[in-house]
Structure formats: structure tokens, C-alpha cells
Length: 51
Image (tube, rainbow, N blue to C red; front, side):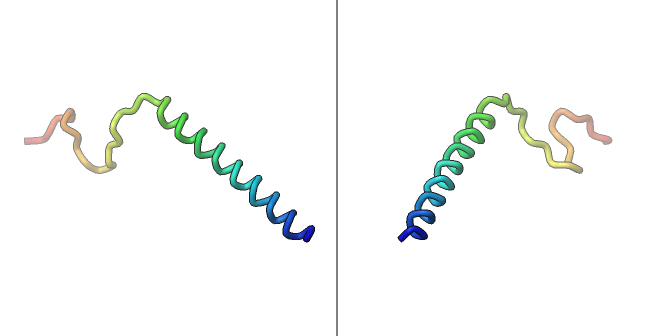
């Protein structure tokens, strides 16, 4: 019975930890004003082309 209770507590702590990390991740992601990600090796619309 103690093993099940310990497993329950560990699972509960892991769930709370995951929720906190997810919340922090979303908050940090929303806080950063984003420029669109540019792929390396490709030209963007703003870059001059060699014609």
C-alpha cells in the first residue's frame, strides 16, 4: 500500500511539474515578439537577388 501511495505522490508531482513547465513555455513563447523564422540557405524576400 505504501508503494502505491508513493507512486501516486510521484505521479502527482510529475503532473504538476509538467503543467508548470508547459505554462512557462507558453508564456515565454508569447512574450517574445517574433520575426518569422528564416531557413538557412534560402533567400528571403528582402534580400537582393543576383540577376
